[in-house]
Amino acid sequence: MPVFRNSRSLLSVILSFVCFLSAAGCSKGEPIYRIELLDCDPLLNDSSEYMVVLGDLQEYTGNQHYRPWLQHTMDWIWSQCRYGRKIRSILQVGDVTSNNSVGNWEVFMYHYRQVGKIVPTIVCAGNHDYTWGEDGWQIEDRYSTLFSDYVTYEGTPAEVIERFEPERTENVVIGLTLGGERCNVLVLEYGARDEVVQWAAAYVAAHPDQRFILLTHEFLTAKGVRISKGSSAEAQFVDQSCNTPEEIWEKLVFGNDNIVCVLCGHNGFVQRLFSPNATGREVPQILFNVQYQANGGDGWIQLWEFSPDRDTVVVRTYNTVRNEVLQDPNGTFEFGWR
Image (cartoon, rainbow, N blue to C red; front, side, top):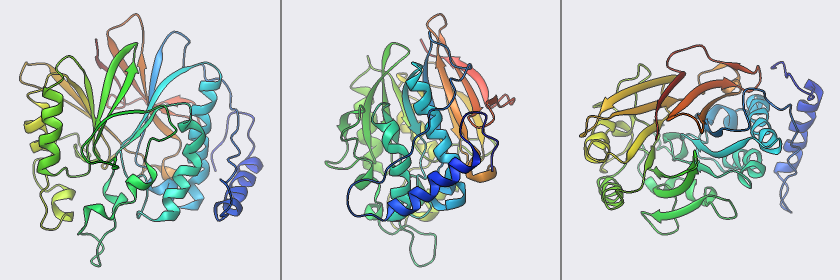
């Protein structure tokens, strides 16, 4: 178990988890989330605004032994908001679940629900959020995912301004204000279809005065290389159109300078790649994934700081349990924003 540097004891974590196990199966009402007010973190300051990035959650939601680390992460976010820290949004990079089961989705909703009421939380679909076939790998039906059943954005502060398909949320545009400025998040499904990429490119091109963060599950390798062939999506989708990350870069990102950056998960831990677009601007492509860390994620988040006195975003990979910043150039860096 982690060493919690706040008022929560190991016993209280265990008790909270036992309460979840007993409540999750109830059919009447929602399980009671025993949220804990943690210490005010000195890393965050009053003048800056922040965005939190959550990596792949599949180990947290799929393994009951790792759920205290997910609970601590969400309690940390909620607590900093209660202390007045300006966390403007949460982005999650896909693989919310381990196997697209109702049980995994319910675990996510249980831990996310309280934070989601106060912070716009934007999620994309990963390969583990689909039902795999009998071979244990291929995805025969894109609509097998329960993603849109759970990620509805109803009753949350997230503003859905465009959808590829009615009633579905795998491909949407969501409006945010970051660093005091408007910025949309363009969410794309795993291994986006041709028609989805065409829809996204047309929408971005039609709104040149708006800026976008592209959020999708698979984009960079664990070594920080954009995937041009041999992507997981190519291998998993059967007889369906599917674009590689390189194709998404060429068709969508390269020619649209209003796409500020790309955020993904799926591989490795922390990586980044800067590539020039058609105007010569270096576009940051940022990978953050926690599934291979100890304890299913160990309490790691990525924290983007928007300071009023600088034109860059400072990105830090931060451990909410140990209150420490990762000392790695791929996990702590900055890029141009304004």
